[in-house]
Amino acid sequence: KQEVTQIPAALSVPEGENLVLNCSFTDSAIYNLQWFRQDPGKGLTSLLLIQSSQREQTSGRLNASLDKSSGRSTLYIAASQPGDSATYLCAVAETSGSRLTFGEGTQLTVNP
Amino acid sequence: GAVVSQHPSRVICKSGTSVKIECRSLDFQATTMFWYRQFPKQSLMLMATSNEGSKATYEQGVEKDKFLINHASLTLSTLTVTSAHPEDSSFYICSARDPGTGNIQYFGAGTRLSVL
Image (cartoon, rainbow over all chains, first blue to last red; front, side, top):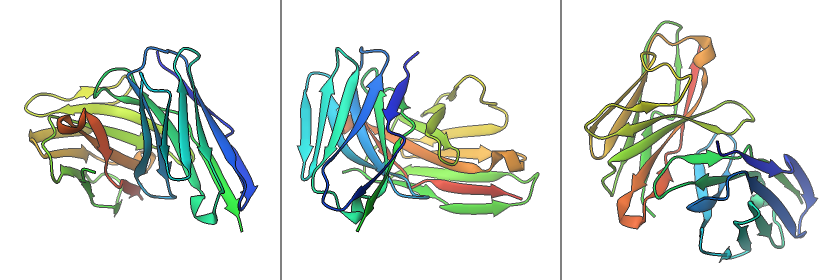
């Protein structure tokens, strides 16, 4: 059974700092991995999706990497802003279009 | 990206009543939709997979008679919480799989259910 773990559970940083969120998964036979953002009481916003054949994806200040063999992914946020404050979730799909298994998230607070 | 609409966004009901939540794919056809549940400060847990034209597949521990799922068309799946009780209070989120974009799942905005 696939298990996804995210570390740290919570993170508080001053504005402008670069930061890294970590995600690990127990079964390396994944199809893709996705990072989401969730604001309090809201749904999910997809940030980046990495296919199993890819090593990284970038969007603006966000960069996600994937090391499938070791079962790890990182989300790098450059020059953090207060508007980045949210919970960040990673999720893996084991086949195309299959259910997603989510981690428990990292709650990020960026202080002005 | 594709849009998934979930309605209502919030519902408050008395214990014992039934509540229906709708999940619609607005600009694509979804043969498969997923229903997740999220407790406060916890992650999303899959409740069931909704398949158009056939019965839903429920995860272990999820009561199919309590959480009725109907996927009657390629753009609509509904989740009905029957005889709701306070312990059913939670955040319910649906997603729809878009075959046109490599089966990427697009998520609704969620429904906050509070049972008094």
